[in-house]
Image 1 (cartoon, rainbow, N blue to C red):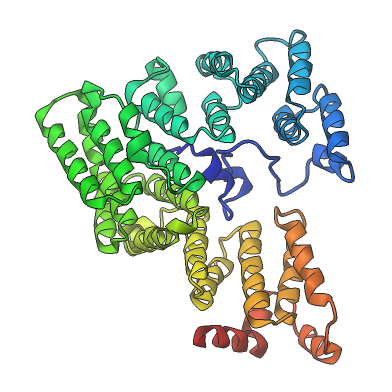
Image 2 (tube, helix red, strand yellow; image 1 turned 120 degrees about the vertical axis):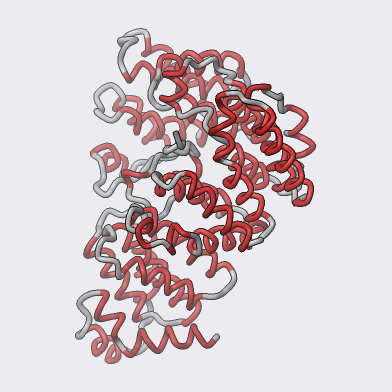
Length: 474
């Protein structure tokens, strides 16, 4: 069964165009924003950091969504250097909490994170291991990943990801393996390797990760895949392709039960290497082969490439590869085959459009970037929050590269009138303020806005079309 939930905490937070309900929060150390502000969020307004910290401790005992408060407390404790204080507070309060409740598990996992910050890694991992077995909320594996990453242990995070997937290092029974979607394949391991490069591009995965990988005879192929992916992120593509081919040959020699499912994922891993190589034709061919193996799960196939794209987004050294990835997916049968395309969730499609637009913007091709953002806006199935992100992206490009203030101002006003509590609310207001400062021609402004009601009015206006033409000709 294909892995339908890809657990990448950092990436899922970065999914700029997914509905908030699809924000799976792969990096759980910030306060998430909802379309409507929570009572807790509103209560924090105009409070200093230390005031927010003290208020949150009091609020924890009465709040309905305690996970939100705990995440905020962890964030503030790190910012204010109050880890020891928060640890004492949580350990003092947990004795009064039912150990079968969700709050108990959340607090225990928060305690583990604070212990990890203090260098007490073994004690932290013991708590997390208990949480894994007891299915504590938040996902204990996500917390473990957070512990590694926020303490700069990206190499250890990648190794642990491999071990839990290939070696079942946490001794999970079949029910827990299914619950956590552990052991399916190595996409998340690949993302962990990218995160190593995001932390320091000069770190060699071959030198620091490969020596720590252990071969599991029943899944020997994944050992070779992991090594090949390490060579790929290090830029040694010939070695990567040779090693993964060697691993593929092992599949036909042995007859372990997992080898059959592992063989279905061969094109997935080869496509990742082709993307790192910037070989679009090879990546498209392998995406199509992988899709053929899992034709019943097109959204899961798309999700795997999306989360890899979001991992690449933070690294300027990987920006050319981001464009290869998004372009290859758009040129694959996921989008070329009409029957498959109709099965794709629109939010995932819009997320891919946004990432592809971003890849164009990175190279200064603002015209083509805007074309993909317009595709999102013009889709009647697009959620208003998703459209707001696309509108704001266009507004920023026009303001920065055309010096036009009228269109960005109207786009910002449309965003605010339709989606008051988006996660870009403060940024929209900031751009709106910049556009209205020292407006040079009020008569021109009044003439322009009197005919503007919505996006369609802006899009069809001579002013907008002139700006887009200028961007195209640059």
